[in-house]
Amino acid sequence: MIRLMMKMLWARKLRYGWLLGELLLVSLISWVLLDPLVTLWSVSSQPNGFETQGLYRVVLAEYQNGTAAYDPAAVANDQRLTNKWRLLELVRSQPQVEHATFFGPCGPFSQSSLYAACQLDTLSTYAWGIHVVPGSNYFQTMQFMEDQQTNAQLDE
Image 1 (cartoon, rainbow, N blue to C red):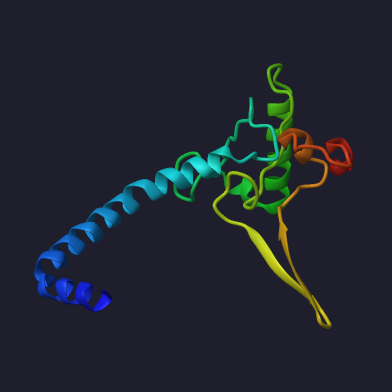
Image 2 (spheres, rainbow, N blue to C red):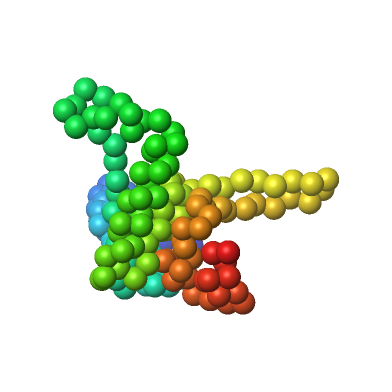
């Protein structure tokens, strides 16, 4: 019986070859179109672990050397640090702002991550990290879901 089926498939290989080609083409097009949509839906349906309602990210940048607004005195590290904290306090002083913080290059909404392998003798583990500026109320601003410690305790 199987031998007869194989003979029939071999006799009509050209016809079945086109059918197989069409099936592969439709599968490939479906994969290219549906995979990004399914992935996007899957990622967006998972909980973030923090509250996104009313959370905004403002990106600050410095003027480049050679522009009219460039101030060479503001480039010194101590002046740059003072200006950052002054801007943060200015944002926090607005009546409609509940919390404000510094946001590092690694963490939620960023395209990079800080991931390191930690090893001691035969024990090996991986750690994921974020940049947090002490005293900037990072955890209270992001409103992470609290498990054992409150966000205020984490900010200390």
